[in-house]
Length: 302
Image 1 (cartoon, rainbow, N blue to C red):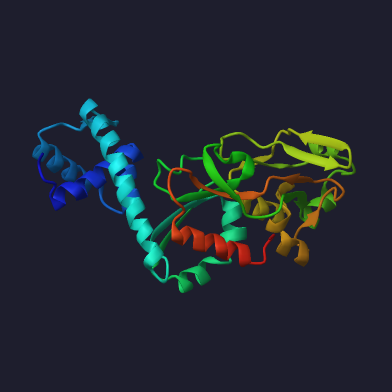
Image 2: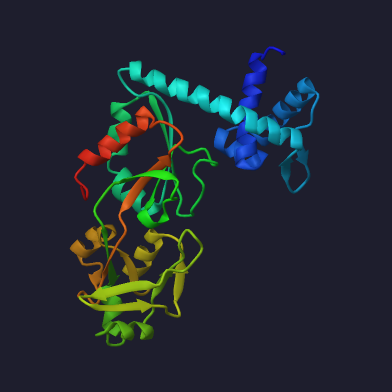
């Protein structure tokens, strides 16, 4: 058995990142390296081992059979190393290391934004990377320690921790828009209005779900505008661009200053809470546990 050198260990770690990211460019972005530097490292590894690990073309990078076998072997080994390093945190006074969280935009603003500065001040040895992304991804294959999503979007094979109460959704528009808009007394009247649709992280356009006691109405409209982020829909509504459907807590300021008002205030819906989730195959990192504790003590919904 040949002895591993420092170069071998470093390059094997890079090899795993490239394989799991699905390409040099994605891995380079994740590692904050240049694709050319990663490519050189892999060529050096292949030359030292005398085996080709990747099929490279102008359009794609794929593992060879040898590369797939190597990835399967080192995945277990590196997993054990990472678990061992994480276990060392039990002997530290404070958490340390890199903590990567993938979070949808609403949760980023409502849950993480108010506490991140204080968390970073309290745990200066933790390097935080927060990716705000509404697109649903595989957090493990993309190198994240945890994700935050609505409860119905959490994969079943993950450990999930509820972060808040169920969430209230409401309809809002600017007073200026409503002044010149058609009458709006029942949900069906929304078909005669400029409604701002939202394309969700799974690629589908969300149909507004409205409830009043036992009555239920689902709006599927000819959307005047379709966006893929909450902030833009709110800003469009503030400028008179139409009616939008959002979490009540995302428009608290606008409702207070009068730039937005509730539309059909007796109608709305209660949706899934935010959940933090992580792999059930590894122990909870101490830095992540500290972040969860911060969320629990912060006066949001909890």
